[in-house]
Length: 524
Image (cartoon, rainbow, N blue to C red; front, side, top):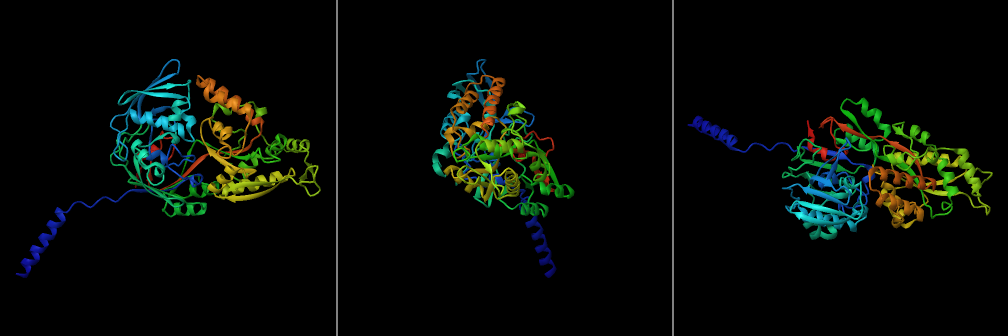
C-alpha cells in the first residue's frame, strides 16, 4: 500500500512538471556606460532637447536614416522624391507603425511634428519648410520656403525623432521627463538622472529602418544606461563583466583593453572636435588681438600626443575634417605659433612683466578663468593649455565643474575660457554655436556680429545645391576662423569598449554604435 502511494505521488509529480509551462527564458540585458558628455541631459523630449542622448536613437524612429556608407535609408518615410526646383518633397510613409501608447503614425502626425519642431531649439532643422500638405493617410507634400539640400540629413538626426502626437499633447511639460513615448524598438521604463536609464523591448516593433537586417522586434530584452562619471570605475566594471559597452573610452585605457582577451575595442569615424571657446564679451577677450594671441599659443600636436596618446589628430578649424567645408585655405587655419601669439599680445598692449605675466598700461595682470568638465580628457587638456598660455605670459585659473553647472555659467555669460567638445557631422554646427540669437548657450562665445549672421543665413537658407551649400559654409567658416572665437585642438577617434557577452555585426551600417543597429545585437 505504501509503495503504491509513493508510485502514485511520483506519477503525479511527473505530470505536474510535464503540464507546467516552460520556464521563461532568461532576460537578455545590455548594460552600457553612456557618453560622459550626455550626463547633463534634462529631457528626452526631441522637440525641446538641447543636449541629446544615445537612447533617443532607439526610443524613437526618425523619418530618414543615414547609413555609415553615406546613403540615406527609409525610416518612417518609405520613399521620397524632390521636385526639380527643390521646392516640393513628396514623401510616402510606412503603414502599420504604432507608437508605444498604441496611437498610429500617419500623415497627420508628420504635419503636426514638423510644425511643432518650429517651437523648439532645433527649429532651424525645419526652417526651410513652409507647410505640409496631406495628400493621403500615408502621404504628404512638403512645400519649401527655399530649397534645402540638407533636408534628408536633418530628418535623420536625434533632434528629429518623432514622438507620439497624442502623448505629447496629453502629458505636456512632463513629456520627455516622466513620460517618453516614441515608436522605436525600445520603450522607456524608468529614469533616475545621474544614476541610470532603463529601456525595455517593444514586442510589437516590426518596421525597422532600411539599413538594419532585423526589422524587429529586438533580440535584446532590456538596455540599461549607467551614468558613471569616474573613468576608472567604468573600466573596472567593464573588466568585471558588469558592463557590456563603454562609450568614449579614455586613451589611457585603450592599451589595457586591447590586451584583455575578454574585451575589445570598436572604432567608428570620429565626429568630435575638442576646442577652447573665448567669451568675446568678457574683457580683454573682446579684443581680437588678445583672442589671436591665446589661440596661437595652443599647441595642438602636443595635446594630441601627450593628453590623448595620439589616438586621433590635431584640429586646426572649427569643423571635423571629414566635412568639405572644413577645407579652408591653410592661411586661415588656427595653428600653433608662439611667436605670433607674443606679437599679437604685444600689439594689443599687454607687455610681459618681470614675473612672466603680462600687464596692460594700468598694471592689470592678464589673468583669465578657464572652465572644464571634471573628467580626465578635459581636465588634462586644460592643464596643458594652462601651461602653454603661461609660456606667452597669460595666467589662467582652472575651475572644474559638471556639465550642467558649466551650461548655467554659459547662460549667465559669467565665463571667460572653456575647454569643451561637440559631436556633430554637419557644417550647420557653426550656426548652432555662433547664431547671435542664442547668446550664452549654445553660443557660449557670446558672439554677435552682423557679417557673421549674414554669412550664416546665406549658408543656411540660400544654398540651392549641395555644392553651393558647401561653398557658402566654407565662406562662413573662413570668416569666423579669422575672428578667432575658438582655439581648436583635437579630433579624436570614436572609441567604444565591448565586453565578451556582446554579439554584434562587424559590418553594421549604423552610424551610432548603439543606434538602430541594436536590433541586430545578441548576447552570448
